[in-house]
Image (tube, rainbow, N blue to C red; front, top):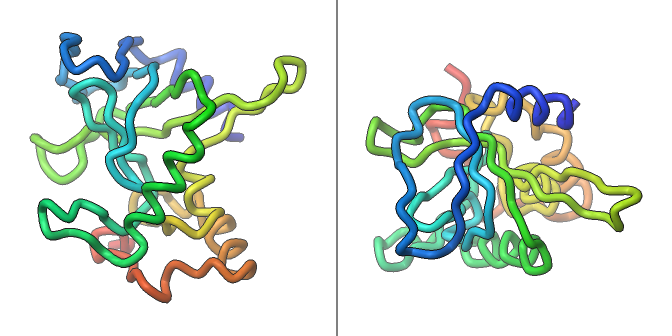
Length: 176
């Protein structure tokens, strides 16, 4: 199902190449679907930075770790470190941006970001949001995910990785 979603998004998207080079000129008008491919840095457990473009992982909520803005929430550092560990041995991340922006018109573009893993003969595409939730470092944000990660969240809780013990689901994630 996820592979079909990724394929459908890829077919309809405009490809934009980006990497972690801060001097690279990358368009920041992401109010239409687009694809970013490159090696990002981790901003938080729910946000990646491609050059100068912050991308918000769609459908998950994770504690913030930005002490500079006074948003150092319990579990935030661990969430960011887990996302960093997922990217440590990955050459490339692909983000399928859906044309929406987090927050308001000045917010970050939102998308599903994936990595490929395997030995080539058996390569799997893995959704970073799903991996964060399954490990107990993020929660399903049903208002924006449609419940896509509820199974991973239940599994994390069953395995003793219940993020809700230190982090409450934000109000903006609750279905209207």
